[in-house]
Length: 234
Image 1 (cartoon, rainbow, N blue to C red):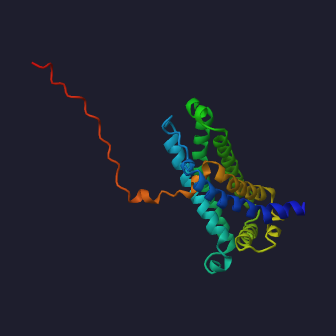
Image 2 (cartoon, helix red, strand yellow):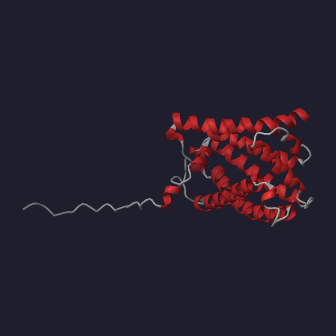
Image 3 (spheres, rainbow, N blue to C red):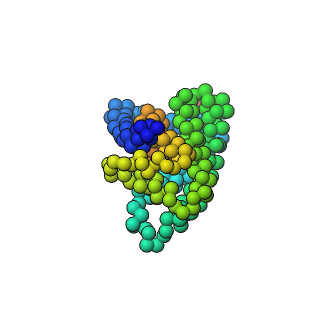
């Protein structure tokens, strides 16, 4: 079991992240025109707008919270917020955005599985990634429930130490994950697996942040004028 824990939380993160970065670069270099989400909105826009907006709002907030919460050293914020207070903040904010994301991904999943036009033109990979994201979100929400049993912030601090050890290439990272509950381990492992799969699926579009949309000119669309009819020639 110790060997499995060491592989999953000491070596697997580097394998997953290496595939994510190198695989994304190779795909952009070799198959640039596949670098897209493959939107199905033209096939059916029912539920697409609200589902997509809620999902992306929730997932971006959750990812941002994970990055700040896990990678910020405790010494930088211990002067104005304690570990228990930080955990409570993470539970409230994560729970709120998690519910928003859950509503959005539920709409998208139902649309993907039960809309005949979307299902007929989709791929197995699209459906699999959506279901994996759904499972990952449910695990994340369940970690909030599990966190209510240790409000002292101790588990949160161990997970933060694990993440900071990984990004700074230090050994012993797996030791911080070993004592935590299974739901945290499953959440971490599935999250790393999503990074591993991203270069080969539509998830690769996470690199394509549409910042240029903020200043690009409006697209001008003109209605086609009907042909003029002058009548028969004299």
